[in-house]
Image (cartoon, rainbow over all chains, first blue to last red; front, side, top):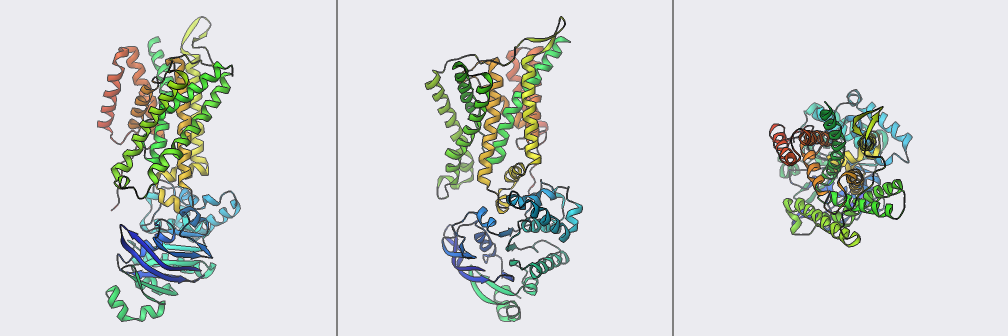
Length: 237
Length: 303
């Protein structure tokens, strides 16, 4: 269980997150939607430790994350797939994947090979192109690679930052559905940040609507997507 | 023909040393974004340590190994003791501007250089002294003919060759090497992969310190040792690094060898006093023809 309460993150005294509280239940997909600038990415970056909050708490399985370093947060089982298909383009596909599991290489050498095999089965195209530079991949393949890098660390909580950004609708639907299947099959907890509310709410169990750094709705995904007045007010359609 | 071979072999041996210096500079530049002007000061200091040990009747090889270890320790110390505290202050007004963030560590490295030179002055009175080589500096003989290569040249080339092979294996075959390349290329994604980028960076400083320490041990039998003798080496090494592309390890090594040949051939076929002009002309030419360096890649910005 991920429990966030009264979280405030500021940039030069502008509150990007202004007292956010919600929970993400284990084994489910929770999606955070909202317009540009609502604070969605800042929320994920604060959870993964890239931004330090000025107050509030983030509890993950009884651990307080706000005082931990990025590396220890990853090592506690939280993997983030950052915005913009973040892979290291000069490294090969295989090296990018290896990087994700590198910190586990001493204690879990055997499992690492299994995890690597699993992501290649999930995304066969990556196996075909494993020796090519990650920079030569298409946008969709890069996103698959970024997700694979996160998955080989065997996370219990996966933070996805706008996985559909800049991708063709078909590709993004494919990627979201793979994540959905993975969550259902393995009990992975997913926190999915999306600007594309329809795509996200279609697979999510629970929806959080953010506006200007505040939670304006915290509802089951079905109810949130059915609420036309909320959508009209905050998402503009 | 003899003068050509002499120039070639001495160019290879000199180039090998420049390659080490250049490699050390590029390692720190890639990892930490700092041009470390203290690098050859560190090498000077560790060479003095080795020299002191030899004076105290330790064997050359003991002193050699101790100097390399001290080089690694000094490199790590510079990062942990100075660079990290300097750059990690979040709420410093001064550090908020990007240009200051990149300038301050460079100025700090000049400070370290000054401190190391003063310390050498305090401990060893700044005296110029010879530094021994483990092999005789005579030309190798086959029968009665002198070859154009000396035993010492061979020793230098061999030592650098082993270092380069080990470095290559480290970077391409080990997990730590991958972590190091990844941290240099994209620190954020690397941190999000659970890798302690700070420690990896410190290791980069340590390896750079070892490489330059080795350069110091290899060059001083020819140049003698004084607090200032290695300054020139930094200039040549830096030129080699820029020629090689600053961000490419392979390029830095290549740049070192090319510069070794340029200097050596100018020395033999022209006059030693023209060497500096040659370095400058070569640097300018390289920057005009290939500003991104021999193996450097153009920066591509995605929008």
